[in-house]
Length: 460
Image 1 (tube, rainbow, N blue to C red):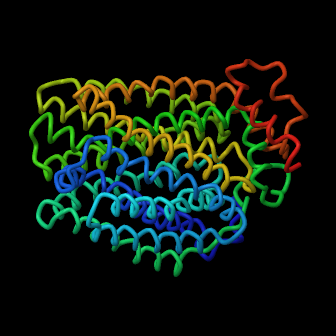
Image 2 (cartoon, rainbow, N blue to C red):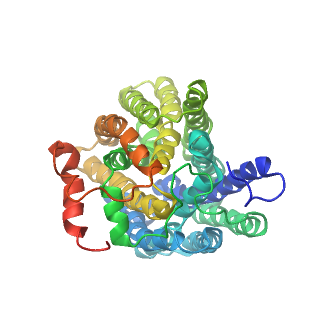
Image 3 (cartoon, rainbow, N blue to C red):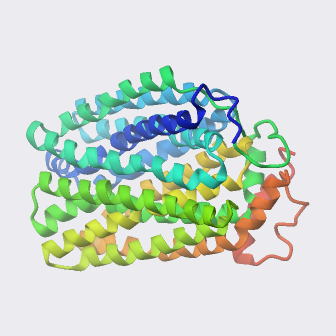
């Protein structure tokens, strides 16, 4: 890996940068998920339905995030990602703390939308920076470790947040969640350098300038492995966010556990076991790469993602349907071991299949899907179904079945990823005209054909 752009001690410095970015993302997760813990006291104070809670926990945030994600992703491909990230972190941390002053449902809803808008700059800037610090053969490990932020942030949410909410009220939980972001933003600005774009890539051609939105859409649509990988991540995000959003409420309602105890269980499941599963799966893929002579094989990452989402669906459904509380808690822990295990392999695969000039846009496009469809619609639909069928557990179990669909997309990604990687290494940006639609199966090319048909005459 070229290291001229790094300060002294480059071999260690990039791991330090990974640690700082993980801390940033931990603040992101903490500020995003704190609402999931306190839904029951908020429901009681404002007299809300499960549908309203689902809107508050997911859809309102997801809509705002999705509107802001594409412009901020394009911006991340053009300006200093470190500075953009530090500014966004400061803003969303302050907005999270301000949510503690909400006096009604509407005010709280607007505050969550504001947080979603600011957090839209988080993932696209960080994953783009990680791609420039770590080559493809190490990205599964790096991204898997970066996704430990989900485990740490969720642990802080349900453990520390649960204690604060139970003893000092749900408003104090918002104040607690917002403070760490200000400190991490100062650390980011003081110690992390903006990396050179494309520094760790192995493509034959030098990275061209950042693309326009139309060019970026055509670029992504021309790569079927990328499309299937993105689709798999988006679909599985529905089940992940739905389970995480409602598990504390489920344990309180169905098993009679107090808020603090339900928070501890969720913290252990998503924090301790989630950290183990997420880091081990990414490290395992890179270990297999080293055993293969250091040659990165993208299909391996896709297959690992497929297996983990299938296993997590089976365990998650079992946890929701059993009646014995100890067995249910044990299965929740087992689900936590698997539910984030696809993150490292799947996201490193995506980063390795697109060029550095379009990574910010690609990640922001993915985040639009995961936040609008996954984080947004997932908890909201589960709440609405729960209101209709009268069973929160049944609604959550039905959502988990979507993992079968996600597994199919990861399997299809494994079939096309090698071709996408070869085109990237050869420096190809766009395919020959209409080649996406000719001679390919309808199920694989429908989306690609539609996007190419719309944007073919623009952005060339």
